[in-house]
Length: 178
Image (cartoon, rainbow, N blue to C red; front, side, top):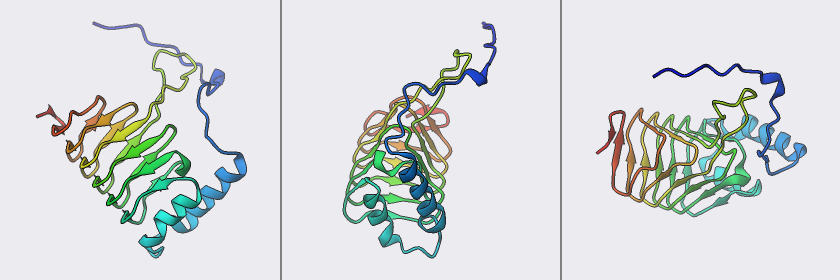
């Protein structure tokens, strides 16, 4: 079954419904800190949680954030205790991301709370929060899309895309949940 293509008119994009959560000065300061310090290999990992907290993130104890981790807006991020975030992970927090305790977000993983309405000619936002419940694992180069909850102890396998909720204890791979 085919459907008619939507004619895009991106010049009409309004961004309706998306609130960055802080003013332009705070956004600019975060981008400066992110790109000049936070992502660098030489910036001490033990300081990354403190920097996120300084920008409004709620971060638990014993959190390890490796270098080259990007966080869009830290004030929309909550991280529990004993969490690992691997190199090159990208947390796109257009909406809140909540990471429970004992969660691993592996190297190159992407948590993306943003999207667009595919049938909207002006491509308006279609964003939604992400929740990783305690003990979840988002493996290397996996992607969790907007509105998804990864259940307690569930795994999003390497290179997989979670576009729907992953039940507790399930293993989601490129072929689907097992």
